[in-house]
Image 1 (tube, rainbow, N blue to C red):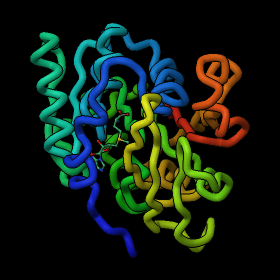
Image 2: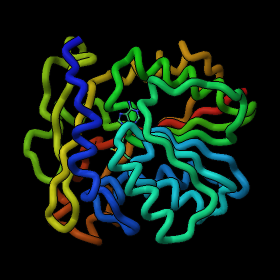
Image 3: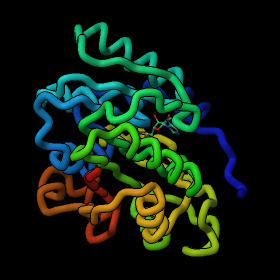
Length: 254
Ligand SMILES: C[S@@+](CC[C@H](N)C(=O)[O-])C[C@H]1O[C@@H](n2cnc3c(N)ncnc32)[C@H](O)[C@@H]1O
């Protein structure tokens, strides 16, 4: 398949650059606020955060009234940072586990009202993505939602300059499926962090959901830089204006 599995090392090495409680990464502006809004109503929900990182999104979900957030991440250092922040802030209703999502066993079915996966699937092959979605549907209560974001599959092909976000193509739009595209995303303070994308087409995401047995039509959003972003910081957001940056999917389990 040609995918070099170094995700754990990638995130263990740069875990401290990801620790934050305020927006700093480009995607903290261009994706996460939108996707967190998609999670509403959050009040009282039991949430699973797949690929939780150091817990930034889960903490925001808790601030909006979630009952409990369970986080799973492959990186020991990201999880250590999540636990440290949890201790510093006396957060009681979160638990974190360092584990590859592919090794996660579904023991209790229909446990969660909401499952999120923010920029996890760009680290998984098509086969692993489908297997993870199969776990998500089993773990969701009927009526619950699965919400995830991924890099827009076209971005790598449309954006040639690096700053402030890019992926380097490794194969064509179709022939490059399951190939690893290295990339970087910048923080507003000028620090770039390394990211990767196991390339999938738009169709791949839909087929994974269908094959995982989701029966409803997902809401799909193509996230991009808005006039509001440009007003905040034209130098930072300007190079990305009019480009498709991320996709967000929201789908219900019947
Ligand atoms: C781009 S970061 C996003 C972190 C977090 N979801 C957020 O939005 O701030 C991707 C995260 O996915 C985790 N990850 C990648 N592959 C994984 C896997 N197979 N199992 C669990 N976590 C994984 C990485 O360690 C990293 O923390």
